[in-house]
Structures are given as structure tokens and as C-alpha cells.
Length: 151
Image (cartoon, helix red, strand yellow):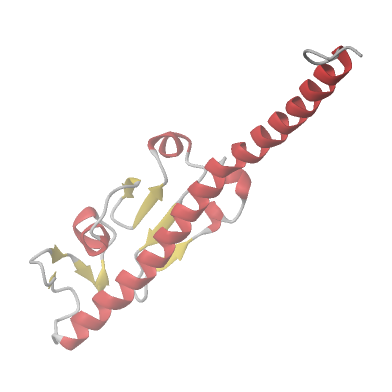
């Protein structure tokens, strides 16, 4: 009786076929991770915008500030305010958030658009917009409602 040394051609081809199928499946799954991460980042930004808007309003009311008086944060940061809420500017909502890790653009002091990265800032597909109004600011999330926007 002879002992086998190695694999037969059929065994090698079967193994290679299985490995190819697994690799193509993994590649497809990993391709969506970047988009999912981008969407999660933007959803976190929406929550941060909502929280900072509410907290600055509460602070302005507690300190009995006038309608457009700047708000001094605990760490000394000054937040520019409009109608008791952070104004749409770097010194307003930007200071209230304590972050500018997102690409952003100020549109005439009326709104600030936040993008997950510089690439999306160029094309403007994946974004959240903070819009200053005469009352409560609005946060436009239509730019992240579709996965296709953040690919």
C-alpha cells in the first residue's frame, strides 16, 4: 500500500474555488463598511448638533442672557448666539460643538453644512446642514437619508 504525499488536482481546485468564493464575499461585505462608518459619523453629528443646541439654549436662559448675547462656556469658549441659539458660524455652532473634525462650509451666515470628509465636501452628497432661523434652528438630515449619498 502506497502512502499519499500531497493533494490531488481535484482537491486543490476545490480548495481554490472555495477560497475564491469566500474572498469575493468578504470583499463585498468590507466595501460597505466605509459607507456605514460615514453614515454613523454623520448620525453622531446630528445628535451632537441637537444636544449642543438644547444645552446652549438652556445655558442662555439660565444665565438670563439677552437674545443675541454671546454665551461663555465653562472652559471659557465664547459661543456666538442668535435668538438664544448658536448662530450658523464657526464661532457659533462650531464653538458649541467643540469640534471641527468634519469638513464644513458656512453659507452666508444662515447655514453651516457639515461633511464627513474633504472628498464629500467637494461633491456635496453626504452632508448635514445646521440652519439658523428666527426661532429654533433646524437640522437638515436629508443628505444622509440615503446610503447612496454617502458612498
